Each structure stands twice: as structure tokens, then as C-alpha cells.
Amino acid sequence: MTGRGTEALNDKARGLDTFAPGDILALLGSGQQEAAKAVDGARDAISAASALAANAISSGGKLVYAGAGSSGLMAMADALELPGTYGIPREQIVILLAGGMANLTDLPGAPEDDIELAKSDADKNIGPGDCVLSISASGSTPYALAIAEAAKARGAKVIAIANNAGAKLFAGADVAILLETPPELVSGSTRMGAGTAQKIALNMFSTLMAIRLGHVHDGYMVNLRADNKKLQIRAARIVSEISGIEFQDAGRLVEAASGSVKTAILLAAGVEDKSSAEAMLRESGQNVRRALGMIGR
Image (tube, rainbow, N blue to C red; front, side, top):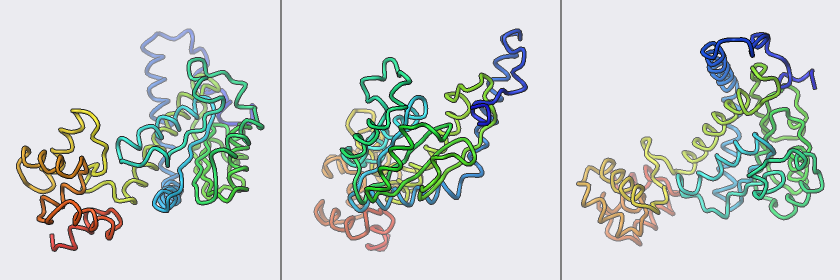
């Protein structure tokens, strides 16, 4: 364990419990900021991973997030946002958290060692054409390793994220994302620096995936699921700002488009009706910019 960076003692932490509170917080804050820099060296791998995930989603496959403990929580947080933010169908996003969602109130450690549970979870949820993102700070968590191995055997693409160089999780992965973070200020507490780097990398991964899928236009989330008042207002504002029409008119078009921002944008650009706009989106691969180009806008 001590050979792993995620388990090493940070020299700055010696005497940590004797420091003034303000000094402790300064160290903790700088530790998080330093850990965040680990993402810079992983951009190429994150880009490659997002391409695999986008291809799986666009082909009708699933994006499966798998992990245990705090790493599993980071994966779950990213996965849960995708249907609402980018309109990705819920059935195409799967979360495999060691021990299942029932363990969220306690997050016991034992399930992360349960290889048979991982095999069972993989058998039930992973198939050819899927993309599996398996994440583990140490890169050696048995559950994460077993999920990755089973996914590969079942014909799925595998993305591995870990915070230690040479992690076992990287073996056999289609894309390996190394986030080599410094030792934690509280040794082994990977919910801190390692978790921060993971969260940033996951944000980058899923956002680039959504862009590849055509769900972002000029920085707007044009495939959001407007299922509450705040998001209905946001949808109308997006249509208004992209098309240049009045907010009230945009709201009416969103309603006419059954809540689809993309369809409403095309209606605002002069497409005759909802069916025609939807057909153009299918032809353009759900890409608003390409669809607008088809009508010379």
C-alpha cells in the first residue's frame, strides 16, 4: 500500500493536527488546487475516452459508470446529470456502484472487494457496443478491476481512470486516464485531492462527449430536458438568444416543439413545422449547426 502515491504521506502534513485552523485550511485548499493540475496531462486520453463514449451512445449502446467508495460517488455524480443536462436517455446511462444504491447511506468498504458481485453486475448490465468507464483512485480496487475485465470479455469498450501510474486497472483498457495526484494531506483520503481531479476529469469527459453528440451549441445546452419551471425558462432563453427572437415567442416555440430546444431553434429559423425540423435533425445527426446550415442559416 505504501508504494502507491494515493497512500503516501504528504510531507507538508507532518504536525498537521498541531497547526492553527487557518493554516490547516490553507494547506487543504492548496492541496486541492495542486491535485487539479493532474488533469492537464490527461487531456489527450480524456478526448479519446469521450469519443468512445459518444460512439456508444450514438449507436444505441450504453455508457456504464463503475466504481466503489468515493471514486464511485464521483462517477455517479457525473452520470446522474447527463439525462437532465444533455437529454441523453436514462436507459443509456448505467451506474454500477459497489454494493448498490442501497449502501449510499453508509458506503461500507466490503463491497469493493466483492468480485462475484462485480461479475453479476456486469452480466446484467454490460454488452457488446457499450462503453464502460471504470474508476478507482488506487487503480487496484477489486470491484473496479473485475467490472473492467468482464466488460472487455463481453465486447464493450473500456475506459480506466486511476490516480497511480502503472495501475492494474489500466491493463487491457482501451483508454487509460492517469490523474497522478500528489499524496493526500490526510494520507489515503482519496475523496480529497484524487477525488477533485477525478471530478474535473469526469466533467471534461462528459461535456466533450455531449459536444461530440451535438448537444452543445455555442456554449448552450441545446438538448436539455426541461422538466421544471427553471429549465423551461432556460430553454426559452436559449432559443431566444440563439435565434434572436423575443423570449415570449421562444417560449411558445419550445411548447410547440414539445420541449425540444433543438426543434424550437429550427422553427425560429423558418422551418415550416415540427415534423420537418425533426427530420432535419435526424439527417444532421442531431447537430443544430449542421441543420441550420441545411437551410442556409
